Image (cartoon, rainbow, N blue to C red; front, side, top):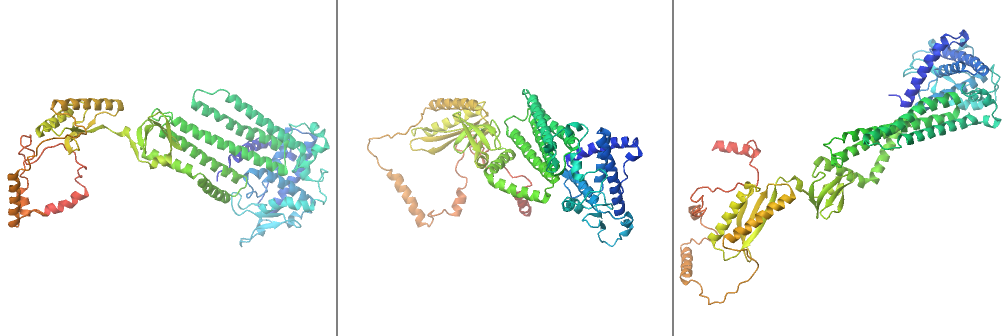
Length: 640
């Protein structure tokens, strides 16, 4: 597993520090040499602890005599070596340093108040066989155990066990009344180390402080707590002033503004991790519960800054992508890219915060469970918003409309102006804005006029009943000729037919498609066609009919008696011969009559032809040669 960012930076700093200190140690005297830490057995681990304790007493005495950087570095090296004797695998990464420091203080106090056994009686590595039993040794009279690590990077080493790290401070409270055996003359390692500070703070200033400020609260002297608070406030003020100075004037470029917003969180991480935390940890040297609070707060600030950087970076990258001229700023693509950026930023931020919470010691299983339950609760609470979000995704993938399209939906018509995350805005014909939730808009029947390749002209005209059949044929022919000749009419779509006998007119239906996709031009073409229709009706000698009634006064000559008797005689003959064509005609007669009517009528271009020639306008596309129906027909044809 990757280490948290804060821990990684801290380890880099520590590696640089130890490298520098090791170089200094090479030139120091023999008494100042780094103690060789050995952990191959309980005996070697306890012996290393005793040697480090003795070296620590000498280093503290020397630092009290002369508070300089060299002596303070010696203390830091010994502290790091003490920590190498601890099994800190179960301690959260964010508080591992301070827990190690507190455990060291507690062990020094405990083992300084107990009589240690002779090192010769402490078992070595050979005392533990391979029978599977836990390899550990407990210091007599204490719960302090030195156990072998069975897995991980320190497998096989004997360290003060994870359980010891947990119980040592508690056990110390039970034996604190016992005298401490040390050459330094103080009563508690924990209290003495808590008063130590870095060389940057003058010892005389600390000595001059009143005793009330030297009292401990949360295992840390009050003056150190006040100093820490002052440093934090100073850092916050500096960062606020920096942020205001950097963002005092907006830039003309949106990308430039996004880039500038990254500076503050980056500076926050740099200042907190590389400046503030080392000052508090090493110079002020906080300890105990307050140190753990500082570590946790530092971790929170660092991870929040990382979330800030991640969010701003994702938004920056997607905003940069939308600068392409092929993606209009208010288009669905641009809005969906912004939405995607926020979703990715949110999910990434949640992951980073969960990782930070794990670094603070929160169980990862509990975090995942909590996020799942919390996500379900949030999803139920914002169900309408999620529906609109999904509706926006449907509009993006299906793309029934785009920004700028003229469309009809429900009883409304207008131009699409914006397709957002929650709703779609349409500018209606009366210039008002109609805002439709995406979920509802995606479920509507949408007519996208912008997608039409041609625009239909269709109308029905009625001429008077006095119009003669040939006169009507002449009008139909001239109307077709006019539409075929029109340069802005698609010839393949022309249809002019005598359609119906109306209540007061002979109805002619006209339909054709104008070769345009622009509304103003469409209305101009339709106007021209209608004016030409008016002229052709007049030229044909007829006129438009209008609802009316004509009353004729005259004597009724009655029915044609000759034709009436002839018709009745024919029916009587059919009846006598048993050939009355009701309810159906004889099959032989129907077959004999098939195709005997002259259509097209006499005088038409196709008269007398076996097949008629009209404009092709099928109701469905012809089947492909390899379609299923054709494959079914092939065997039948081959059989025939």
